[in-house]
Length: 247
Image (cartoon, rainbow, N blue to C red; front, side, top):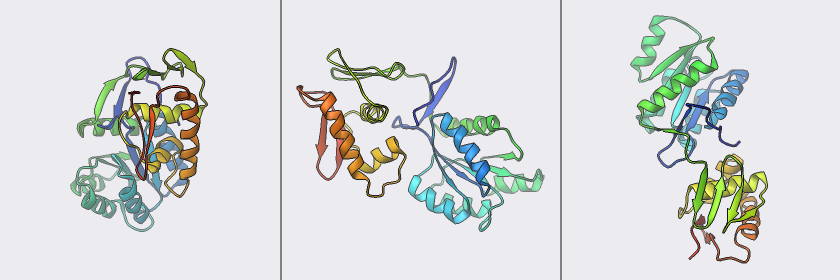
């Protein structure tokens, strides 16, 4: 999914490396996790979900979320137990509890074990997003106005709003997937990106042997970006790919 465009006065939250925020949603109600995931992805964030406590712990270790939305009532471990496990791996990740009960004791218990905030069901999606944004800002995530829409690396430019790509002033036509791949490379100039990173960011796949997809699309990009010119896209055997200005 492409990033959400910021509206008037809208600010974006991003990780220090410029990548989208990662949020783990943990709830045993599939309809609820689907709705939350859709709303969070609309914010431009990466989302993973889990339906029970053990699944949440496994996913968190692999995904390394920047924030967690955590239901208190889960079918195996309760949310408080899950939080304690999460804190063992990441002592600072902000956690927003979801609770079906409006009991003061439960709210106090959640905050006592290390939760950062809570929302009582039923809740609005806007409230969850607002509270997550507040937690992320307090955690030091970048709050920026809409960044300059045009990315530039050497003589290569990419306009994120018009989706126009040019090299040396010459217009280059890309498919939607080629555009997303190039945008990822251009957001990380001179940085080696592994096939696993590219799959996760561009195709939203967990790495599972689909490296040939990355190789195929890198070859497509090379034919359009580098054909007849000094190459900008480079392969580091065994490590990944990087894009840098032509020498």
